[in-house]
Image (tube, rainbow, N blue to C red; front, side, top):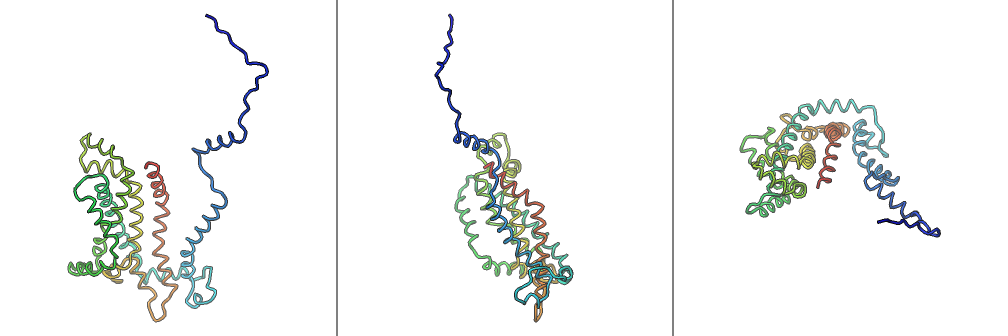
Length: 306
């Protein structure tokens, strides 16, 4: 059996390559898996938002380097004076900020770690476990978020006074060991980030509930745990009302309580107050500068996995 090959006719016109349309589609396909570059307008907007965000801290440092007379002038100063380091030294000594930093680190660290641990376990239970009253209990947890914190001050203070915990750090730590927001936050994250098939596979392999939590839930919830820990650390560090009620400036003050005692007098020293506020803010900036990239990377990793 023989096969014959037919040649195309001489007048046949070869197909023309696509012009702009095909080129555009090719560029779009090539860029689909690559990085997107922002235009100049995006950079301008980002620069404006960055300056607006940095300006309060910049102004705090300027005010800490001036005196009351210069701060009262119009227009106010927009550059540093010569008294910044002197005011920082005076604020550090007068407010006993060394002990205050240690106390606040203990309070914020213990509270943040406990909140992250308990919220992850509770969030897993509300998201993946089936038990009676689950929805009702979740509504109660959400309902506690709607209660103003000021309404909790009087009963909490009565309990602390009865336990004789005034002016002690446990009076600040224990009320902040559980967070309704943390439970809700972790529940919403685990609903999407943790497939039911992984839990069922672990159960089939004979894993107990605690082993599932330790080897399955915690690795899957790591990005959300980092974000929640950062938020709770900042919130506890900046908390003022409750520590101010149960702690004293001469006993076991936190940073906010210690800074509140600066500049007292008939004419408050605004520069000294600003210096204390600047010192109280610097540790948060250092923490975010060190762990901010890991936290943002964890958020993006969790978003891609979800």
